[in-house]
Amino acid sequence: MSGLCRLRREFPVEKGGGRHASPLSFSSGGQATRIGSTATQMSKPNTLILRTAGTNCDGETAYAFELAGSTTELVHVNRLLRQPELLDQFQILAIPGGFSYGDDISAGKILANQIVNHLGDAFAAFIESGRPIIGICNGFQVLVKTNLLPGSMAGRTGQTATLTNNDSGRFVDRWVKLTPRKSRCIWTADLQTPIELPVAHGEGKFVPAGEAVRKALWENGQVPLVYAGDDGSAANGAFPDNPNGSVDDVAGVCDATGLVFGLMPHPERYVDPVQHPAWTSTRPLRKTGHGLQIFTSAVRHVWDAVGAGV
Image (cartoon, rainbow, N blue to C red):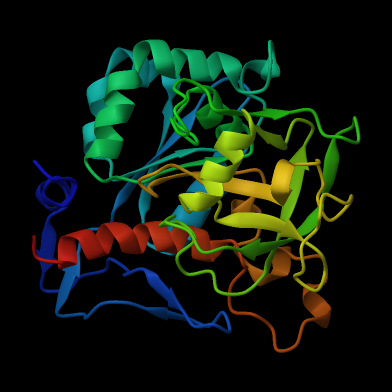
C-alpha cells in the first residue's frame, strides 16, 4: 500500500464541516489564513509527541502542532515500547527537545538506542507510509543517532553524521538567524525568507562522517536550513551567527524522502509573535511567529495527501 493511500485510509474525510480548524497558509509576509472549504472538512491530523525522562519541550511542541491544525497526544516511550502499534493511530511524529535520560553517555543516545533496538521496524513503516517525523534539538540528536538522519549516503551505511560539543565549549542560549535552502524537506516548504529562532544546546555542532557525506547532503537537497548573519548572508562558521561551529553552517537536515527532519533551533518557542524579545518594536506586528510555518507545512502535507484523491 502506498504512503498516500495509507494516509487516506487512516485519515478519513469529515463531511458537512464542523468545528475542526483547517491548517494555516502563509503568505511571503507571514500573514496567516485558513485552508479548506467549510463544506468539506477533514478530521484533524493526529500528532504523537514522544516523551521520556528528561523531555521538557513536549508541552510547547504540542501547542505548536495544535495551532497548526493538528490534534496531539503525549506518549511516553515506555508505552510505545509495549505497544508499537500505537503509531498506526497517528499521522505525524515529533521528538521534542530536552535532555532525554539526562544526556548520559551522549546527548540523545539512550533514547536512540531504545528506538533502534525495539522500535526500528515501527519507525521504518511509519516513514514508508508517507508520514512525517520531526526531531527538535534533543530530538534531532536522537534521530541522528538512530541513523534516520541524514540516512545512508555516499556509499556509507549506519550513522553518517553526529552532533557534538559546541566549538565554544559551553551551553549556548540565544536567538539566531536562519536561511532556508532549496531542499526536498516537506517541513520547510513554506519558508521563503530568513527567519529567527532561539537555540539552547551544548552539543549542537553538526559534523558529517567525511567529505563524501558532506557533498552528498548538498547534492541530494538534504540541507533545508543554515545559520546566517543578521542580513541573511552566510555565517561562514563564525560565532555567534553559527552558535556551535556546525560544518557548512548546517542548522537542520532531512532524510532522502524529505519526510524526516531534524534541527537544533526551537521552532516551537516562536509560534506567537510576542515570544520574540523585540516584539514590541516590530512593525507591523506579525500575526504568527516564524516557527509556526514549520508545523503548518507538515500538517498541510498530510492534508494534501488526502485531498489528492488517491
